[in-house]
Image (cartoon, rainbow, N blue to C red; front, side, top):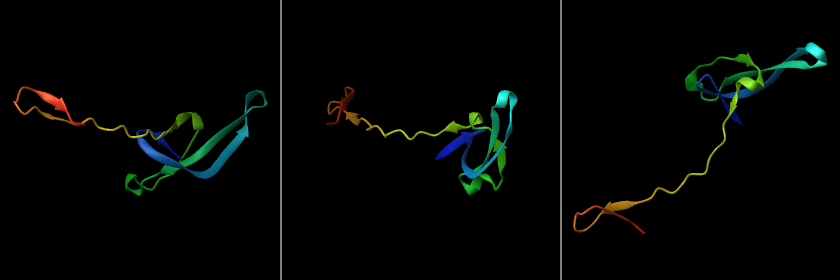
Length: 78
């Protein structure tokens, strides 16, 4: 699963860092790196709340149209 961080598509490396937090709650950071090597070869530690999860959407069919035979406008292609 990939995420967006600062306008870059990233993936988790699988490494996690944690420490005790206030009220017994643990603070966690996750290591990320670019999903595409063309965006560099860096790693950064971020909280999961800083990442936007990418959800693939099904592609919608593109409606087709053409110019009417008499040139008066557009008509749908069926």
